[in-house]
Image (cartoon, rainbow, N blue to C red; front, side, top):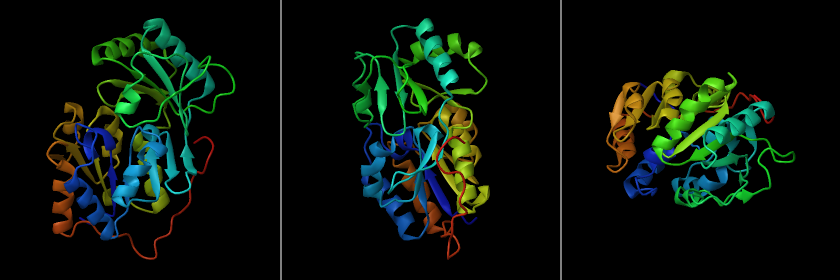
Length: 288
């Protein structure tokens, strides 16, 4: 049981219920890094939003962001892999959502920013989750915006569930839908998603599935856990995520990530990749 890469979801997993990094969790991740084992985040957030977290943890290298739509080099911000929505699919999603519920918060996430076309009453939710303020544009579907990694809706879980049920049957097959936290619903290209992003990262690093430990809590983490040799769901996680896991950690309010990492380190199950360790390359920039 030699695990050579640790992959961590952020909200609901690495961070506690108040969106804070707890000292024991931070210490455990730093201990993994001191042991020479690479750590990657797998988050729905922008790279810019997690850079302070990466610095505090002492984590560098490729990071999975935007719910797997992009894998970026943490230092330079270079997109090593990027799977934006096709323009026709983006238009189909936005139009279907606004037909189903004209008042729900709709936002577009690009590699470097968030875009909205109205000052929605719930816009403060981005700050709550540590994202920068969105840029207000005249029209989300107008030409000139950068490629869109994902469409994110925010609102009460029951409202988002109603939108999902209404729009899912009519969307193109290339569009994936998932919940991240209970108050977010996201749409992205089928080639995106945390699972495919992790598979591509493993290939880039020359690591088999069995060498990966992955932690997650939400529906969007299911594909991530399936690409890991040890799949760890949080005690606060969704039932479907827990059902797919090899192990259930204590909750994010109980330092669950630290509990598992400390155990793996203590038993010598976390080991650095062979040295010298060279990346194999892979997709860079552009579409997947």
